[in-house]
Length: 296
Image 1 (cartoon, helix red, strand yellow):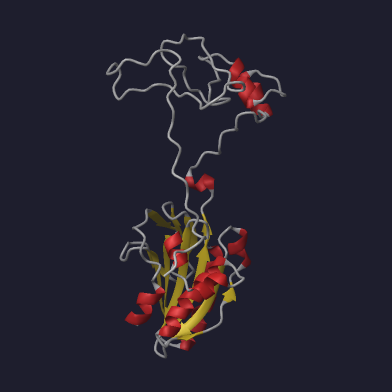
Image 2 (spheres, rainbow, N blue to C red):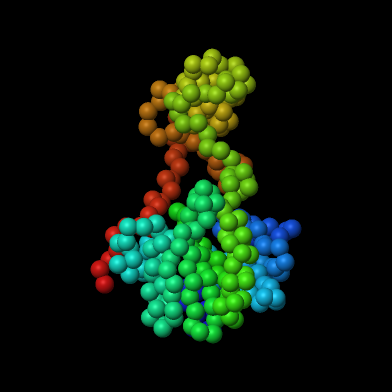
């Protein structure tokens, strides 16, 4: 079993996740996941192994289901055999191909890869599953992938009969696996881009016409009011010393948007002269997981 566990939990290298388990509903804001524990199963989210998010256990028929997650990175993708990378199929199917190849190398019997439930795909977390055993331990594993994570749900039983008896509970849990929504994560919707149309509700709130854009509205608002160089409704104050009524026309301004000067302590440093812009650093570019791999 140790040999199978070391391979089946190959995705367990992530850090311990901040999570909640309440009324049989598991949520992890760190991994952005939600899953419903099947009825009649005991569950615990106490971290016992890096990357292992949730344990679910049942004594009759005996079975155990675990949920794991790891970041989906270029290194993970490039660890898959080239033949698995090149198959014309989904990313979860390619990951299953890679894991199946590793299992087969350990003389484990591996079954064919099957498509996961439609509920996963509709939620933006497509999945596949397959079964394998070494004659003593019988497992079913689902693999789901989004742009950030490789997620596994693994059922482990001591016999093929116990695996078959627990398949329904496993499938129920898999169908409920989905990413958390922005509202569940507490993420605010993105602000309108410069030059985009202002919504009627926003226009009514700030007293502008329905045909004005976010940029032109920002340029016409006063510094003490609704507009700033960042666009409509940003609420950013104008730089100190530029006057309470100063404003920047974001619709016509060129170059990077100035942001207000802020010292570490009030009065610890004098603000720069009026008109001196400061700039926010751009975030580092995201390296897409799928791409060219170094030759070995």
